[in-house]
Structures are given as C-alpha cells and as structure tokens.
Length: 365
Image (cartoon, rainbow, N blue to C red):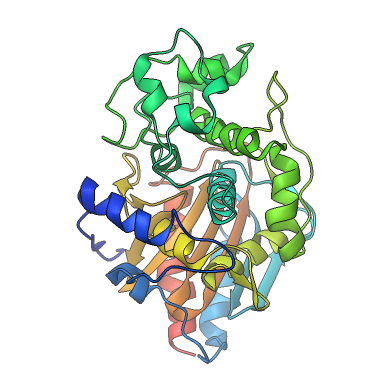
C-alpha cells in the first residue's frame, strides 16, 4: 500500500499574488529577488554532498520489477547527476528521441519561466489581453481576455477541455487557438484544474508571440543549448504555431538532463538555466488533479510517498519524469505511447515502483 499523501493548504489568492510578485514577476537571470521557501520546497531542497550510491540489491529488484511491466520501454535512474541504471527494456536506444506526450506541458511551463526570467513576459499575473491580444477571437467570451498566464500554467483557464474525447475535434479544427478560446466556460478561471492540451497550446503561442519567435527556436535556445540536448521539430497547428502540451520529441537521456536541471533548482553544470525563484514558484501547489488527486504547480504534479515529496511530469501511455531532490534522485520512464496508462493502472504501477523500490534503494545506500 502506498502511504497517505500529505497536503499543504493552498495559498489564498491575495497571498498567492503577493508571493508571485515577490518571487517570480521581477526575477531575471542576472539578479534574483529574495524569497522564503515553502515547507514543501524546503523538503524538496537538494541535499549537497549526499552520497550518490544505491543499495545494489534493492536497485536490482527495481529493475527486475520494471522489466515485468509490459508497457515500459526505457528506464533511467540516477542520483546527483550520476546515472546508475540505463535500460532500454523494450524500446529504442536511450539516446533516440521519442514522443514524450504531455511531458511537453512541463517543458512549455519551463519556457514560460524562461520568458519571465528574460522579461519577455512581465509575470504570471499578465492577462491574455496584455500578453497576446491578437490571439483572442473577436467572438470569444469577454472573460477570455482576463485569463492569466498563471491560469494557463495551472490548467485553470475554466474553459471546456480539448483533451480526452474532445481532442480529435480540436486538432481537426482550422484554428486550434481560436477553437480552444471559443470553448464555453465550465468553471470560473482559477477555480479548478481542467486538464486540457488546448490550454497549454495557447500558453505556448503566447510565449512565441511575445518573443516574436517560434516555440522550437525558443526551446532550443533557452533549454536545448544550455542543457546540451537535442530538440527536433514537432507538430504545428494550421497557423504554424508549434503544439504546446503534446508531441515533443526527446530522448530519455535528454529528458534526464532536463530533470537534473530541475533537481538542482534551475542549474546545469553551474550555469543558471531557470531562476531559483521560478523553480520555487513551480513546485508550490496551486490546484489538484481531478484524476490522480495529486497537487499541481506550474506544469508539475506534486506528491509524497514514504515521507518523501517529489515532483513529476506525466505523458500519455506512461512517459514519466520523477524528481526527488531530498535524495538527489531523478528517474525517467518511457512507455508504449499507444496504450493508456491510468493512475490506477500502469502509472500507478510506476508510482509504486518509485515508492517501494527506487526510493528505498537510495535511502538505504
């Protein structure tokens, strides 16, 4: 049985705005504002100098258990940057790009942070009308203009979703952004999480429009170059915007580097890729998934098992990136992208693998 998840009270909206204005909106790569880490952030802080070893027997059991999960394609396990397990179990070589599905949402959220760090976007309280008014259809509900970057990041735009059974209708539409923004409101913006790839697609288009560049070139400059990872082109919409929220291609090894940067609070090999303020803000819980029950920040799911808080990115089929910074632990799992992976199915099995085998292998080293 997995341990009960501890939760933190969500900040009230006024205090959330105050927190973000103090920690994110004014952040730049050159000068970081002071901030006070939350209890979760303190628990998830990197443990400098900790032993990067694993209990070999337990780690071996973890690999054996993973191999018995017939949807798994690749597995990478590392501590403090050292890869201890790199197994292409049923899939392609681990340096070959694969579709990471909705892990793309976490990558786009990181690009939003990079845009704020650089002053391309003023901050998360910026509205659609301020950031990219030309993207809003003339016949959209007037409330669309007031949707904020924060609400796009947390999937709390309030609009009817374009994922699940409505996904096909959305991608068959002649204008994906207009279609997403013309959906009826099924909740007030900021009220609750409504999982929708269209919401993240709008976010990606806002970043691109504000920067005056396409999302692929931004991803290559802001993430690919500093991390030394390859970012191939992926799906574009009919207007030429790269898809936000799905279909990005990354190799498992490159995804491990992305996770390591996040584990280190935005640093890679001593170089700052994302501000510490953005890392803190992204791992602050702001809403909750209606499917898994796990908390959600800016593009990251947040959970706890066995007294260890961790963040994870999740894509259809079981494309997973887990980061457990208190143990210096980063785990990448790729799975069959054509089979569903529910929280009470394959993804639940992967979470149990992390909690019952991988985390103890690090704790008992």
